[in-house]
Amino acid sequence: MERTLSIIKPDGVSHGLIGEVIKRLEKNHIKIIAIKMIQMNQKQAQGFYAVHKDRPFFNSLTTFMTSGPVVVMVLEGNNVISKYRDLMGATNYKEAAEGTIRKDFATDIEKNVVHGSDAPETAAFEIGYFFNSFEIMS
Ligand code: GDP
Image (tube, rainbow, N blue to C red; front, side):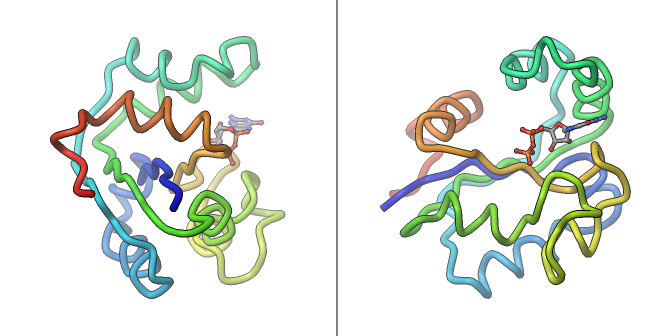
């Protein structure tokens, strides 16, 4: 059993895609074991994306991620990290496979609707960044 962190980013929330993303999770038998809506401040977004701090898009990305509310979720299942990333599609929506969330709804390489952890270690860090143990149903 694996866990991953999902975020419906500000563009996904403002474009009315919360239900659409959750529908795709449930249709694919991915279990949601924690969920909440938050709005990050710049410091929180910078801490979350610290691995990207030297990238040229860091400021733009953290400003975007603080621009409105996001929905953070913990997902659980067999191979859920790669399974959810397959549903998300490639970072650049132009390269994303047909039928993926990003292919269907992203408007920009940055405004790409969803986030998903990329490995078990990052998932553990990212889940702990937003949730305490009482908020996660196991
Ligand atoms: P992910 O794991 O598919 O989300 O991709 P990364 O970890 O590489 O990047 C994190 C996030 O940074 C992406 O989801 C995008 O929102 C944003 N991002 C990635 N590459 C670029 C870029 O070249 N330009 C801009 N503006 N944003 C980017």
